[in-house]
Length: 69
Image (cartoon, rainbow, N blue to C red; front, top):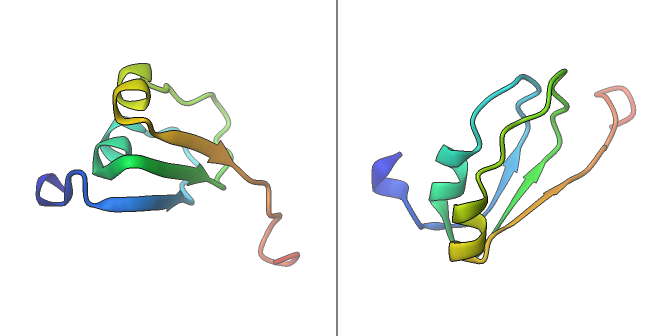
């Protein structure tokens, strides 16, 4: 992952369990976007510094389960 730092314009995060967001944020370029569609049972920690300093955006979408998709 270190080789991919600051190389991605956007990431679609489909992980539905608690996991750290910092590694994914480090992969995003300036103005990159992280969109999560997984819904963990507990809230995720969101580090603010990488968002502010990297002008990054975090968003979410509820697309439904596989049957609806």
